[in-house]
Length: 185
Length: 280
Ligand SMILES: [Zn+2]
Image (spheres, rainbow over the protein chains, first blue to last red):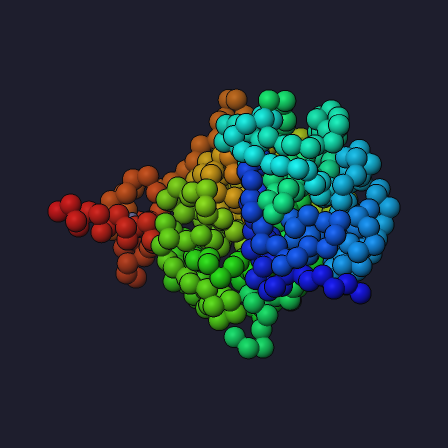
């Protein structure tokens, strides 16, 4: 059991959060604010908690290492089975290269990495190009894991297979679909 | 609204469709399987498009539905009524006012914006299906980006007719990687898909596939250097608004062979007529 809540309005908050994720995934590097639960459990940022409530359920193996309170919360509100990193559809905070990239015939089985960072800011930092971007989007990511951009370059070489990333900080997100190219700012 | 969940579908079905949509966006032009649900409308009425719309729709959305460019066919009217009843949302016939446009067989003439989403109803998602009926083989072709068969088919068209005879469902390459069916829109509309500012989502209910073209993504109609793709329209002006750059329908006016050409996009035509009247 958990004493920490889910969305105040599961249907409408879930819809609004999904549209923010869809917007983020369609326009890589644009920062989107999510509706978040009134209080996130210890071990999860509000945005990561909102993403799990929006996307994860009993049909999606989940890998997270965020402590017992977060695990109890996920079990109660999402019902997701916990899995090893390589067997999970959704993974919280793990090295990019550890996740499943899908296969050539089913690239959609490539997993989604939810990665908590300390801050996201548009207009400076990394230079993003690719589908969803008219010319160039810039995204400053504070607190990305060491070697993330090298891992990202390797991820792109596996196209159309690969891992998609949703970055979270506080109650905002930005997405990096596998199709986006990133250069250091 | 009692007895329904918001927008008809239950939350676990919406989550499943939403996950498929996100993967479709991340892999432009790739067909993502999803667990299509029975809908209270028959196949052929756009159950794939309806499920995509139901999974993305929120209370602030304004929905437009067109069928062959028209807002007032039975199909379009029924789908709008369905979402007004199950989601309590506003609907419109104006392309400019809509935040979500669900369409069968046309892309609106008015250029779409970044804050709009275009949802296509797709009867047959597999562009290679008529050339290669084995599903395992078409999957392999997509995996290998082996599209020689489609080029051969188009070249046979040229040998037989002197030009590419395909005028609907004309196949496109998305982001230089996946061959995609644009759904049965006229080839005239294909260029509108290329680098469109709006997100384009495609739902096939019977075949249980979702695919997508993100904003500002390259969409190229297949062609050859010596036979470039040409969008074709009837060489007439619209009888009602005078337009010479829109897609026209031929309409019989009597039973002795009288006929006129009018815009297929009724909202665009009405807007042009109003502009013309204001100017006079
Ligand atoms: Zn007209």
